Length: 256
Ligand SMILES: [Zn+2]
Ligand SMILES: [Zn+2]
Image 1 (cartoon, helix red, strand yellow):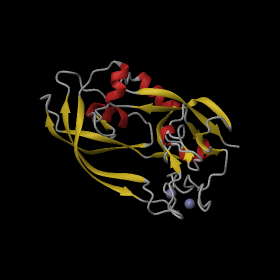
Image 2 (image 1 turned 30 degrees about the vertical axis):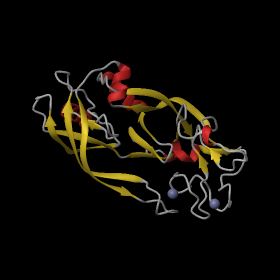
Image 3 (image 1 turned 120 degrees about the horizontal axis):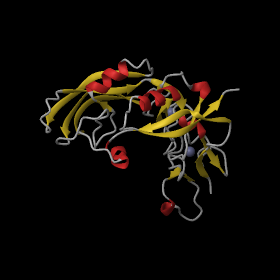
Image 4 (image 1 turned 90 degrees about the horizontal axis):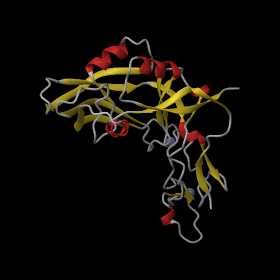
C-alpha cells in the first residue's frame, strides 16, 4: 500500500547549523524543571486562509489577545510561561527584556497576554506573547508518497499534499473520498487510501536553506511544521543559561 513518509535523507544535508526547539510544561517536566506556569482562559484570534490553491486550507492563526491564569506557588518564574492547555508561547517580562537586547532576529514580542488571576500572588498582571515571524518555507514539501504518485488514490485529479500550503487534501476536493488513513488499525482489505503513519512525525526535521529568510528564530509552516533556531540563537540561549527549553538537532539542506 502507499505510504506517506517524511524524507530526511535527500539533499546536501548539514548538521549543527539549525536546531529545533520546544518549550512548555511537558518540556519542563522532561527537563526536571519546576517553574510557574499558566492555564489558558481565553483568546481573540483569527484563522488565516492564505493558500493560493484552496481557500479552505487553514494556513495561520493571528492572535490579538490572550488571557491566562498563573499557577505554580512559590516556584520561580522561568523564561517560558506557556499554558498547560494550549500551544501558545508565552514569556516572562525578564526574558522579554533579555531577548529584545540579544540582537537576535525573527521574533516579535507582543504585550498581549493579560493575567486574569495570579494564583501565586506574585503581582504579575501581564506576560508577553512570543510571536515567531522568521520563516523557512513549508515542511510538507518533504513528504513523499512511497509506492505511487502523490495524487488522490480515487480520482487522481489532485495531489494529496497541497503544493500551496502543505495541508492534506483529505477528503479530496474533487471526488470527496477520504484519501488518508491515520492509523494501521483502520486499514481495510484492498485499501486505496494512503497510510500516513510516519508523515507527521519526522525523527529529524530538515530546513531548506533556499526557503530560509535567515532569521535566528523561525518557523517551518505546513502540516509538518516546527519551530527552529539558528546556531547563533542556540549559543545565546546556552550562554545566558535559558534552562527551560529543549533543543534538538535538525538538518539544513544547503542550496545548490
Ligand atoms: Zn479524488
Ligand atoms: Zn493548500
